[in-house]
Amino acid sequence: MTTVTIGLASRSAIATRFVAAMNGEPQGAHIAFDTPELLFQVLTRDRWILIKTMIGKGPLSVHEISQRLDRETTSVQDDVRALLDTGVFEKSPDGSIVFPYDAVHVDFMITAEK
Image 1 (cartoon, rainbow, N blue to C red):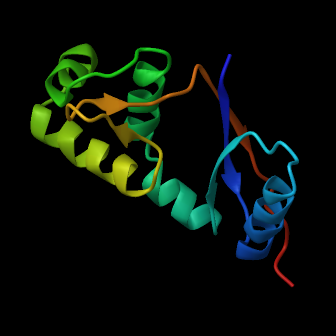
Image 2 (cartoon, rainbow, N blue to C red; image 1 turned 90 degrees about the vertical axis):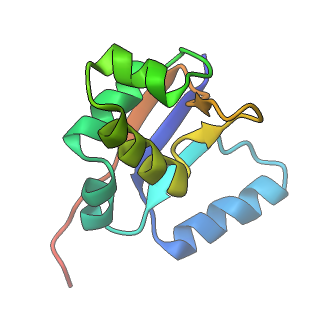
């Protein structure tokens, strides 16, 4: 099973993970956002449903995704574009949309500001 962890990470934390990976330490798949506000701006309710629909399904066209979600193609296309732009989804060579993971782990903590 291929799992991606979606969460919050500072640029320094991402740099630390990058250095560890370059030193041969497995890091797993991560999608990180700088702030909770950015995470929630990108990962709206409809986009979480879209991600859930794509888990383990392989490449799908926007039309196929729209049919599975019973949503208008134009609104799904906007959500797909946002998820492509942030690296959550990938585009296959034939133009299909891919979420190459079988599971999603969400991991973040919000603390008081200093």
